[in-house]
Image 1: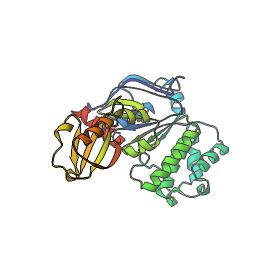
Image 2: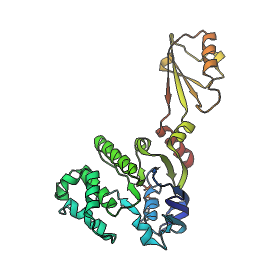
Image 3: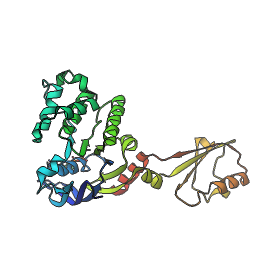
Image 4: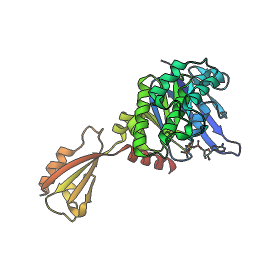
Length: 309
Ligand SMILES: Nc1ncnc2c1ncn2[C@@H]1O[C@H](COP(=O)(O)OP(=O)(O)OP(=O)(O)O)[C@@H](O)[C@H]1O
């Protein structure tokens, strides 16, 4: 199936010379959740706003649903819902009215049934006659999503959907996004929160200095790059790693009461069996063993650091 969004060799240099995107290529499949992760100034917002046709590309080509976002702007834009980072809402407008108005902006015929569906989906139906000013922060964010969904887009862009919101509300937003996906909406979100990408995304794109460092299936990424650590608690303290264990990537921890072994989960042989034998031969008695896998955060921090080096 052709990708719903296709970005080819996209560059963006702002007037003044900032090169925000450097030859970015990216395909987004229909129905997926793609999280774009990157440090401040990486180019995430520029990428989204260029796809949405709000920023002109310097070179390259973008299509949405097969429509070129520059030559066929209207057709491409009709397929897109955009939830901006900032809450821009008319404080005295009522929820239903503001969402219905957004639909009108896309030249779509009035459809009360659709607006009701969207408001119910986002748990805003009971608040349909409330003024925006009377809503909580979380409800306001949901109104922004409702507005973005009012014209029945196939692709929804969420720019930092949970920036500055508390943990509970963040989890609520994640739930909403999953629900939208289950209804067939393709979702692209930008985030600084690695746990957010970990919790929600099917694929993760890492962007730094205007370049996509990788786009990969989340589970595969974590398996491929996630080194595992095994912590071996010893019965008795040691002051140094015994000679017989020099061949292993071992570190001492907890003032000599623990050995930390780092190994590659993808390697054919992890060496754990041999290590256990060699520990015994070195006269070390083991009290307990536990393993931990490096998180997406470790992977991400390493990757961005390497890119900057
Ligand atoms: N309108 C603009 N004019 C000039 N430079 C801009 C403009 N918008 C963004 N930039 C620059 O382009 C680069 C990428 O910015 P962008 O906002 O796309 O990054 P980001 O990854 O979304 O960052 P953040 O996570 O902080 O939101 C930055 O160096 C920024 O200063």
